[in-house]
Length: 276
Image (tube, rainbow, N blue to C red; front, top):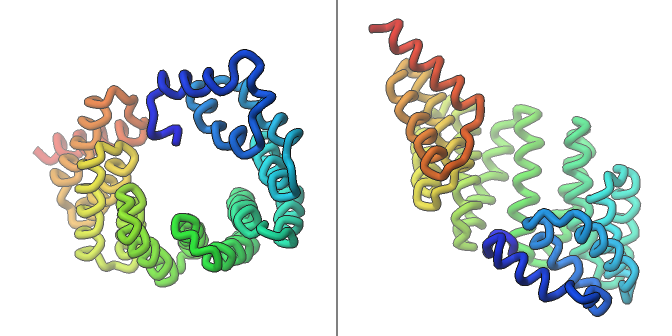
């Protein structure tokens, strides 16, 4: 929701819902629902107030669970605390969506400490729940985590299986951003297996979508992959062209370009000068 409205409109909505003490009339669902809007306008004090309010006015165990989950996420809750909430959530009637979300977060936390095996266990359980709920977006996000685990283990065949399914679901959902991301991930895995022609085609598809969306992160990922393939084949001018195009987009959008992009462009430019 926060991505769909401007900062000014977000502030207008938040003010309408919370000014004049009307926060007391907000239920747990609405309090948690407007958190992304509050976050987008940078009101950290109101953010904390809403999380506390959501916990206080929760009417049942599922609402309490969602409020507690939000609190733990925003207050550096421990891995054990998240695991305990996941266990409790699975036992609740209608608690499956909550349990799936908590297990997904648990997997990400485990990945942050390099416990890949345990992360796979948590995300697979989350995926099982999301399959039962027919939560297509949740399944896509879960497959992305499974793919990440496979990449860490350099199990490229498994990564391709997970990412290909992500790609199919993203296309079915007509979600361009997830389509773009899945294409780039499949391309990376294919390149890692030496399938450079296939990888090049998929990176280019991802880049085409990123250009249509004017999506700087997606543009960078795809062009970086294209540049990698070009350098493998000693096509340094093509690598420079791909990354220069991305730099142009960052400049056009008024966004600071990543230092790694600047350095790679500098290195490629210097290499070109040495060859002339």
